[in-house]
Image 1 (cartoon, rainbow, N blue to C red):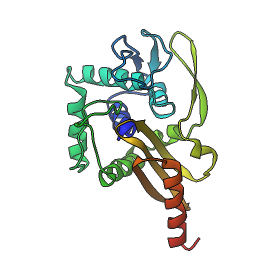
Image 2: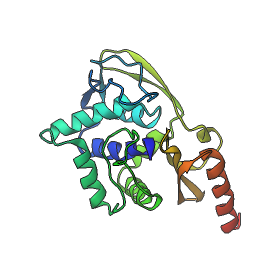
Image 3: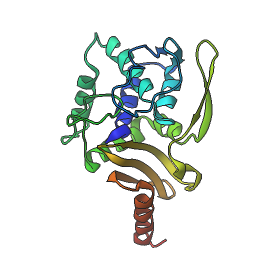
Image 4: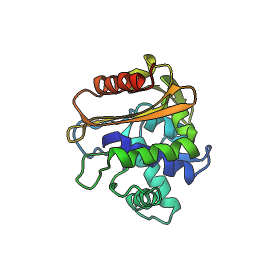
Length: 220
């Protein structure tokens, strides 16, 4: 499911911290684990508020930010491996066909989910953590570290510039997962529809096709 995994990481970060807690981009989090993975230009040793770590994960989908968040959360739970916390939460949400083994969404036979299970996660976020969706809709912004260094973010989802009624979104892309996308859209006012695109060759085309079909069903 590629970087859609970061939605679970974001949930756990929100549920185990305060918005102004400081999280470090560690040297370990900067270490690439697969070729071509998306790593920020932030040097190890920078600290950011939890709120800003969410922005790094959800807007520009940086893997080092997800790993840094995982290290921070794991330490708060007595060094429990972060995937164990992810899988515990998945069980709580009824995601019976899902399993997580890393916080960023790197390709792995042990990091997987289904469209149905991801819809359960999306529903949980919509009800309990709408701030995740608020952040996911930010198209472009600047983030400042605790040492006042500025970092610029641009959203990975160009649909934000095309569709006005998006509630929340997250993109993903790896060689193994191909293109993936979660998109929550208000088809009618306060009537969100969840789209989950997995293993796509063209997620933008696919979700636009589904959007057009749903609008026909709604008689729009």
